[in-house]
Image (cartoon, rainbow over all chains, first blue to last red; front, top):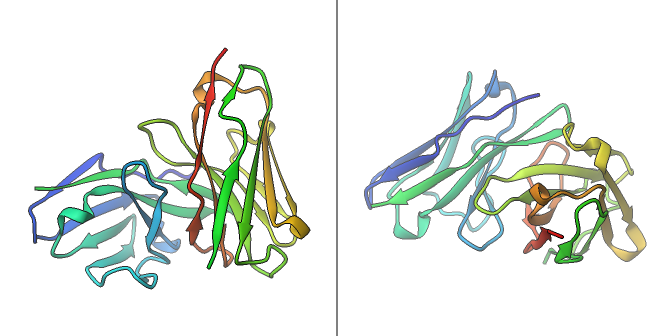
Length: 106
Length: 120
């Protein structure tokens, strides 16, 4: 079965750029979606199909996907960006989530 | 505005069957391309995809849980039902339903989730 690998945690200084990776075999050939989840809340879509932002998501959130790694980039990180982030793909119509990354804003 | 809400028991005993209902509004599950899925999250752990039902009644299941899961829809009631048999304490989790509006797309909208505890 297809697997997605994320770092357990990423730290970023306030106002700096955070990059969260999502690794998978030839993930560049798939559409990657990213979700933000704050404690006690349901996940919220922040990036879809590699690099598209839903309405209401700040431009500070961006995504890329190539080769074996997809990346969620958060520019000018704010305290409110502190959350868990999950990547997700569809593999032969089966949903797959990464293990999640806890983003800490210092 | 799209909303989804999960409902079902908070506590189930080991070996019992869990039945969860997702009641939604703001979209139709008879619209081409639309799907509703179930995702769960054990306390402190990652999201895990469980199942998806398509507008045309096609269904997909997690390979690791396929033998225990059944997903159905009632388009007239705007509901999707997930059943999971032979519940075990490791199935303790918050269960979410979510809306996907295009094939291959993301889960655009999520319910608030419902916590299910498996304990005798």
